[in-house]
Image (tube, rainbow, N blue to C red; front, side, top):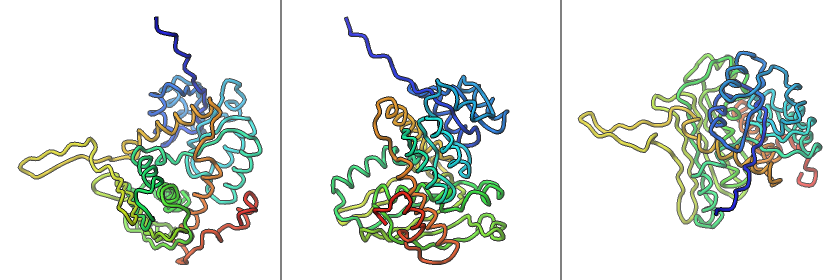
Length: 352
């Protein structure tokens, strides 16, 4: 007779936010066995109801009502970036484990506030930089740490969306190198190390009307890492061929290249040439990574293990992204350790 298996632990969560990111997460959450969404909260009641119906959850527009439920062990925050810090702070006060989509906050001041609230409450916490859970990125990290590349010398990232979101969204999103480039800059830190300085140029090429708002839809950033490696980041909001995400790390012994060019991995050869489909959306390219990061969050909370990246780690990625955005807008070369030094001193006085 087979011994009985241990009952599967399920983390009961409230999904806070039923917009684009909430809906993307909902499709992943519906297939996870270690997470159960019991509440869906959104200021748009109809959106909350639609996502709640998909997940078999209670819909509400009242965040405090969800946070007051004793059976809600954790929150998954997928609201707009400008609301992250406040929602994190309120959830921490309620004693809930916290998973928040990136960025940690829209400003460095709010990011510091979120970190202080979470660490004061002592609640488990994780921020959604899902590329750290992408199998190719995980393998690259392990190979780099094993010394397969030797001394790291170069980094290159490309991030391009098929088409730009509405102008009103871009004007309020916090800047191209924060809203979209933030993932690549976090990955730069994850794979290569801390960035010492950054400079950037950009333009409004796909949506010229952005220029009158001081915004960009295309940008190139140059990075100098503390370990001496050099890097570039290209970000754009329009392609004719689909979602385009590439990452490269160069070392003295070789090169790692991360790219999913085919979705599925199939090429069709006919009289017209060679054809293949590629990912059209971030949820297609990183669906596996989204599932892995949420499962890691749920298992970590249940087991009492440290979660990664934490809000403190995400604050450093936010600072780098904001420094890059400042370089883009100002034309200056920005020393990252000097950017927001006094704010960072509030939580890391020993390092500054």
